[in-house]
Amino acid sequence: MTGEYLGWTLVVLGAGVAVGNLVRVAMVTGWARYEAGAEALMGAGMAVMSAPPTAALYGTYGVWWAAVFGLLCVGGVAQSVRRATQGGLRHMHHGAHLVIGSAAMVLMTLAMPGAASGPVLALAGSSGHGHGHGAMPGMAGMGGMEGMDGHGMAEAAASTGSTLAWRATFWVLAAYFLVFMALAVRARMRGADGSPQTAESGGSARHRRAHRKPTALSALSAPNARLAGHVGMGGSMATMLLMMTA
Image 1: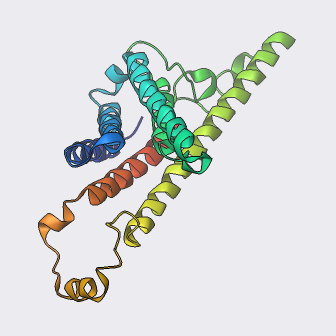
Image 2 (image 1 turned 90 degrees about the horizontal axis):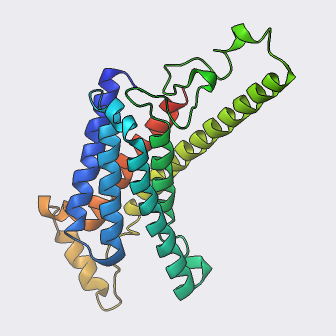
């Protein structure tokens, strides 16, 4: 799927996402804990998927990985529906990011070739291999098209169209993760994830902030761990999605 160095870089990012979210699991409760655990599992999956020694093994058991990520997706859908039922449709976005992330993991898993088999979801046309190792869609079978009848031509055109549709889906998902990553950083810089300031804190809180010095422990917080996980996952997801369609 990737060059050796880039592959190991993605392994480090995926492992970092997993460790960061495991730390967040110990800091939060309720839905936030489920979200952190799910993202930790996705980070571990990306690390195994990207490591050159384990990539083929991951693809061999890809159906099982896809089932796990599918269950995480169902959990995200359930949370979105629950929030919408309790607070209206404007609260339906809760869990949406987990749904999209889990769905992306399912698609990437199905696009991974196994040790002795091609991918379930082929992104490179008739070559049967995505991740940049096969020919471009439709190019591998050009040599045998001379004797192909109308039915075969129609099937080839349909296969090429399906491949292009899946590739476009991967591009859209990559763009989503890049935008989400930027918005997460912007929201954190604006303090959207920080503790709300109460009215009674007033000027005294402003005075205390003037003398407060950042410490190593102050950086270790649930919002910061969440931001680090979203940045690491967003960057890793976008990179892997784009490389699978290259």
